[in-house]
Structure formats: structure tokens, C-alpha cells
Image 1 (cartoon, rainbow, N blue to C red):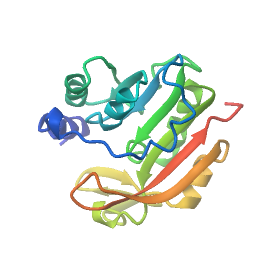
Image 2: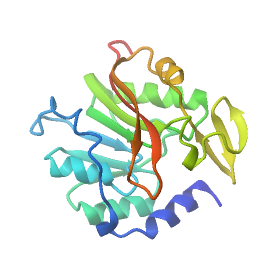
Image 3: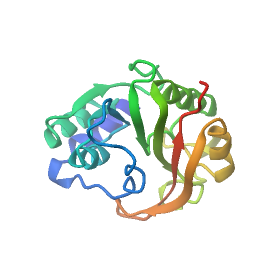
Length: 210
């Protein structure tokens, strides 16, 4: 089964009333005035958990995903939000310096190291000076959701049942964001799913020189 079919099937089974958000973004949004100009990009928005949270807080959001079913669900959930179908392996279809902030919640851990670095660099490109990236990625201690399982492709990057997934440790994240100003990096446990999921939470400001 291709990735596109997998994600479309997954999101086609969800209903808007099933979409809940947690409060992981709460510590980061305080300095961002909802009435300011420019959107927050929700990259890999999935069912729209974070888009729902941010729009309820009054922010302008562009919800982005490769799955048509995900975007249809988001539009049903938050009819006023803009959506954009995109593939993170392709250049982001946004102008340089156009975004106030970028959310990447569980969407940056599916790629080779070289592709991951390129995606992070492209996120930097679309952020305005001083723009923030807020992300969550799989931890190497996320054992309930595949850490250490499958065929190794690169360090902490595995293929299992035809799907590829990366798990991060602190040194890898520090290397990936070495040119950024990282204001927050902490391992946390999410409770959005049936089983506890261990993730890294990161907040970082775009580097001055891209």
C-alpha cells in the first residue's frame, strides 16, 4: 500500500467530532498576537488537531497535508481555514519570509537525513525573520510506536511493513537545528492516542542567515 493510500484510508475513517487537541502549543503562542499579519503554517496537519486549536485562539492558519482526505476533514472541522495540498519532499509552495510561525506536529520523522535537513532549511526559508518553528517528533524511546523496530536504513531510521519512520535523540536534534536558536527542547509523553507516545518537543527561531 502506498503512503498516499494509507493516509487517505486512515483519515477517511475519522469524523470531526473525534478530533481533539492537546495543549502542547500553549507555552509557545503567548508572544504571538492573533491580530498580526501573516499565517501560521500547519505542515502535515493531519486531522487538524493543531489547526483547530490555533483557529480557536484567533490565529490565521493554512492547514497543509499530502492527504486529500485529511484536508477534507479539516475543512469540515474548521470551514474558515485555508488548506494546501503539499508533499514535504517538494519545495514548500510559499514565498520567502511569508509565515509568522510553522507547526510541524509528528510530520518531520518520515524522511532520510538528507531530506530532513532540506525540509528544515525550506521551513527556515518561508519563515519571516524571528519566525518560530514548533514541532514534535518521535523519540528513540517511543517503543509503543516502533522505536528500534524494523530494518535499519540509517541511524534511528527504520522500515517496517513497508513504512519508514525516524526516531530522534537529543544529539540528532541539536545537530539538525544547530543553526537555529533553540529555546525549548524536551522529551515528553503524549496522551492523544490509545497508548502513551514519547516525543521530543522543540521550539526554535529561524536562523538569521538562511
